[in-house]
Image 1 (cartoon, rainbow, N blue to C red):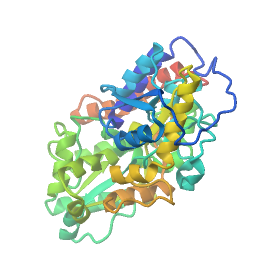
Image 2: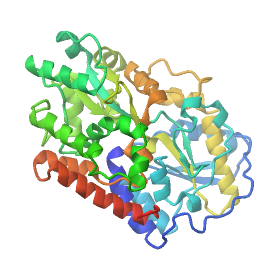
Image 3: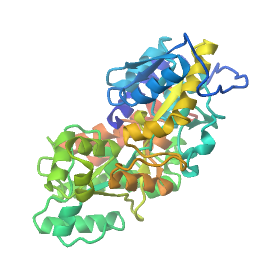
Length: 435
C-alpha cells in the first residue's frame, strides 16, 4: 500500500545503506543474460516469491499454470506489513527470495540496492509487447531495468459520485484544480460535503499536495529538489500545503476529517455523503469490495486533476511490479526470469482475466468486467507526470506531517521544514550527490 512507502524508505535506508556511501558500490558486472522458453522444463527447481498482504493472492493462477507447464515448484510467502520495511531488513541481512513484489520507482530500487541485489531485466522478451506509453514509465534505475510492470500503475486523481454531481446540476467534470474548488464551493452552498479526507489513517493526505504539484513536477520540480535547487520549503511546495489547509479551514471537507479512516472514505463516497475523494487505485479496490461493477459504473467516476488541467500523477506501488533477485544460484536466477517471461507471455491473458484487471499489452484484451472508472484511470497514464515517490531520490513522511497539520499540531511551514529535514537525511543515506 502506498501508505507504507515513506516509512519503509526511512527504515530501509538506515538499515541497509548505513554501511556504504554509494548504494551501487560493488555491484556485480553482468554477463549476457539469457531468457529460456517460458514453458521450458524446470523439474526439481523451487522458487520463492515474496508478497505483501494485499498482493499475496495476485500470483495464484499464473503460478499454478507455470508449475503445470514447467514442473517447477513456486512458494508464495506473505511478508507482514509494513511490507517494504520487512523486505529491506531481510535483504540487508542476506535473506533473499527469488522474486518479490516491489514498488518499481527509482527511489525504492535504490533503497533495496538494486545494482547489487537485483537481476537486470533490460532485454526482457515481453517488453516489445507492452504499450509504448507504459514501457519506460517505471522500473528503471540509472538506465537499467530492474522491475517488471505487471499491472497498471496507480494514479492520484479524483473519484467522484456521479449521482451527486447530476443531482446538483454538475454536467461535466472540473477542467482544472481551481475549477474543482469552484464546484466544491457550489456543492457546499447546496448542503453537500464536497470532499472527504481520512486524516486518522493519514497516508492519503499527501495526494492533495502532490496533485497541486503536477505541473511543477512536469517542469522538473523533483529533479530540482533532488539537487538542492528547491526544497519542500520553497514557495511552490509550501503554497500547495497552505492551499490544502485553507480548503480544510474553509469547511470544504467532512466535519470528522481528523478522525475519519480509509474505510469511512469509501463508504461516504458510495453513499453520496460526499461528492469527491482525492485518492489512488487502492481506494477503488475498497469500493469494489463494497459493491459490484454495475453499481460502480453507475455511481463512481474518475478524473485526473492538476492546476493546468486534467493531468494525473502516477505512483506505482508494490502490487504493480515484480523484481528478480541475485541469489548466487544461476539455475534459480534463470528460472525466476523464466517465470516472469511466462507471466508476461503465454500466461498473461489468463492473468488479467483472473484478476479482472487492465491489460498492459495492446494485443491482450481487457476483461469485459473492468469498471469504467479504472479504465479512465489507466487512460490518464499517457499524459500523467511522476509523483514524489516516482521521481524524488527519497520519500520523506510528508503524509504524517500533513496529518499533524490537520489535527492542529503543525503549521504549513513546520510541515515543509520537517519534511525537508527528513528528505535531506534520507537522501544522504541513499548516497545522493550533494547531501
